[in-house]
Image 1 (cartoon, one colour):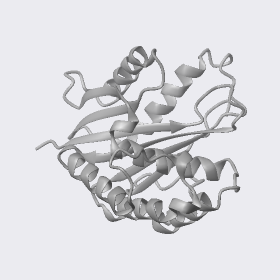
Image 2 (cartoon, rainbow, N blue to C red; image 1 turned 180 degrees about the vertical axis):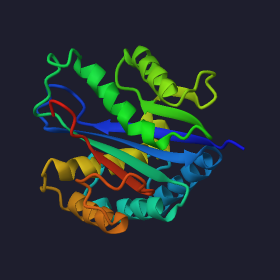
Image 3 (cartoon, rainbow, N blue to C red; image 1 turned 90 degrees about the vertical axis):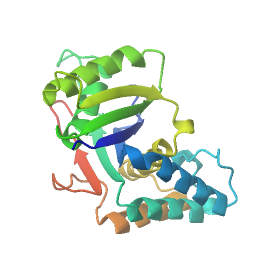
Image 4 (cartoon, rainbow, N blue to C red; image 1 turned 90 degrees about the horizontal axis):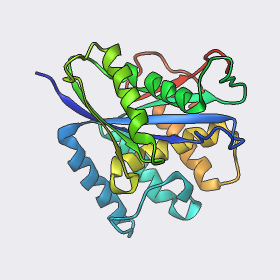
Length: 233
């Protein structure tokens, strides 16, 4: 019998002219029936660290003063066998959109397609949630949905059942995705000024057994990474 999965997606440094050399996309997948339980467990971690249940987990908030909280979140992700992460690292410094007859937005959604296509299996059903970025997202995700449906021959909409824009501050697993993506982005940008972030990245490397800058084996389960090397990049 088909199982339904929720996939929570977020990104870091996706803008064309932000002068940041790398974009990172990421997605946490979770069986749909376990999503509420995961949210409750994450809120319990917040409570243990005397934070409001509504406290938004964000990479930009990571500091040495709250490092124990973020360490526990990271350990929770690796301890929970229902949660898996897929990330895509995409250098932006040599992109030539004109040469390939595309806009930056079109390239961005091509990268989302590459992020998601390998974690979608036609025997299951998927509900995909992306963080709201601007007022044009609704029309763009229709294109992404069509591409994913075509890739897995989902003519009847039984595999990709939903692609929806949501507010990340309302969804704990989306916030957890932001944390993992932020760590990978920080490392791949060569930043080193925040002691708390550096400690969290080292913990991430140890728990994953990955360097967080390289493509992992195709079938890597818990943490699966692609360092994109497309034409013009």
